[in-house]
Length: 96
View (tube, rainbow, N blue to C red):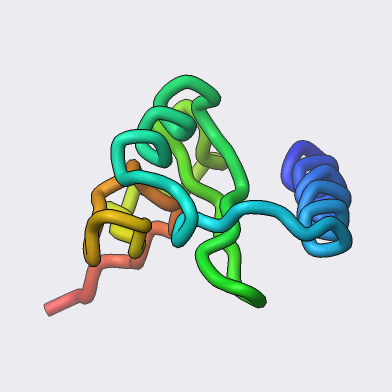
């Protein structure tokens, strides 16, 4: 139920973000983008005209069974700026 509720919230946030033009990470300095993620804990950021993703500060902002994957984005001043992480599904271990 929690993931369904989170999905609905994310759809509302993403829909609203796409409906309104606004700054992307391309318009911001690396330190500013990283600061937003650090201060908010979890945030959806536009990374280009039609691209976006959810970035998090730590695993407290991920669902159960998800792990952190480091995230680098292009910003106004840095080609590959580390801004935090994204939550991804844990991959099952291969059996030998």
